[in-house]
Amino acid sequence: MQEFEAQTRAFAAQIERELESGQLNFPTSMDVSLRIKKLADDPESSIDDIVAVVRTEPVLSAKTIRMSNAMLLNPYGAHITSVNNAVKRIGLAALRCLAFAVAAEQLTQDKRSKELQGIASALWRHSVDIASWSYAFAHHLREQFLFGSSYTFRPIGQSIEDFLHLGFKDEVLDDLFYGNAARLFGLK
Image (cartoon, rainbow, N blue to C red; front, side):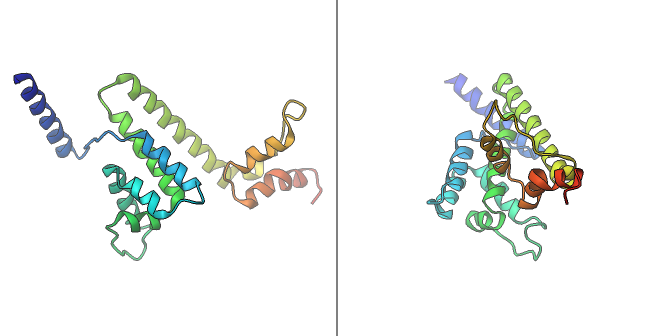
């Protein structure tokens, strides 16, 4: 019984330290992030279905509300306090990203497993790297790339489908598939 009491005191002290530092860490389930993605991708699911899943994670709920009150998403300052309104304000694409970001952040701060912490940190760094390259490509380098395929090794339709699923806007895809090459070879 003394061992249990000692563990309880140590746990309470850890929570107190995290509260004082502003870095309270609750383990977040990656399963919730995957469920949100699945529901958001399912045209048959409703916003209420998604909100119900978000509500199961207190950290994700709080960060969703905080994000919805950010000046960029809430320029008129209408204070949002419900998860339902917050999800509607930020949208499903941002919610998907936020859910995975919260899960990865919590995993990197989880002190129970150094190996898992390392994997989560590497995943986070990789995600930031991909996001940075995607932003640079979409906003600054889009006129510098030509679409290419590895036809004969891979069907061209599959390469086109892969590009279409990257999430680029139609005008970026037009440049990739045709516009940049037409400009380079004087076909425009």
